[in-house]
Length: 255
Image (cartoon, rainbow, N blue to C red; front, side, top):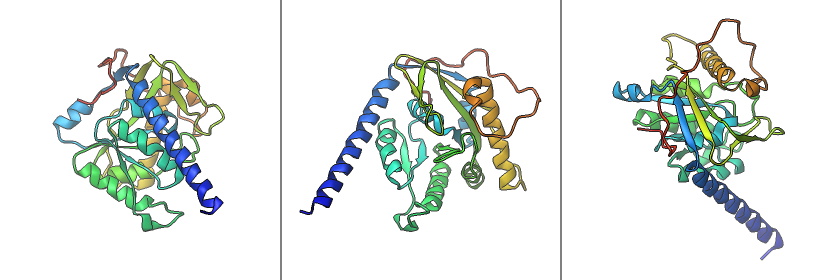
C-alpha cells in the first residue's frame, strides 16, 4: 500500500478519534453544570404552534450544545471542520443537517443544507445557526438566519449562553468559550423576532444582528467589546429578567 494512503488513513483516524473524544467530553461536562434560563418564551411559542429558530454566536457553540433541545437541527459544513462537530451534535441529541455532496467544493452544499434546514423547521422541530460563522467577523450576522426564518415562517430567538466560569480561546477569531466543570450556564433569550411582510432580507438580518448584539452587551459586556458590529445607539436596552425562570440540574432545558 502506498505510503501516502497509509498516512492519509492515519490522519483521518486521528481526526475521528479526536472528534469523538470532544463529543464524549461535552456529554460528560453537560451533566456537571446547572442551567439558568432567562426570558423564556419557548413553551408559549410551542403552545401557539409558532416555529422558532435560534441565532447563536460562534463563540457560544460549545455551551449551546450543552443546553440544546432534543431534535434541534444544526447546519454542518461538508468540510473537515464540519465533520469534527458531527459526533458532538449526535451525543447531545441534535440532528446534523447537510447539503448535497454534489454542490461543489466552494459551496460545501450550503444552499441545499439551508433548504434541508427549512424543511426540518417546517416539520415541527427547532433549528440553530451560528450566525457569525464559520469565519466571522465576530458578531456579524450573516443572511442565512434571516432566510431560514423567512422561508420556514419561524420567529428568531437571539440566544446568549454565558458560562459563569469558563476558558476563553483568546487567539481564535470568535474567542471561543469553553465552560468549566460544575459551572452555571446562563441561557438568555431575546423576545421573539418576527419577519415583517415586505421587509428586505438585509433589513431583517440587521434587526437580528442588533438584537443579538444588545443581548450580548447586556449579558456579557466584557466579551461584547470584541464583537465587530456597528456601534449600538444610546437607546436603553431592556434588561434581562432579574430572576431565572428555570434552574434544572440537568441541562435538558426543553420541555
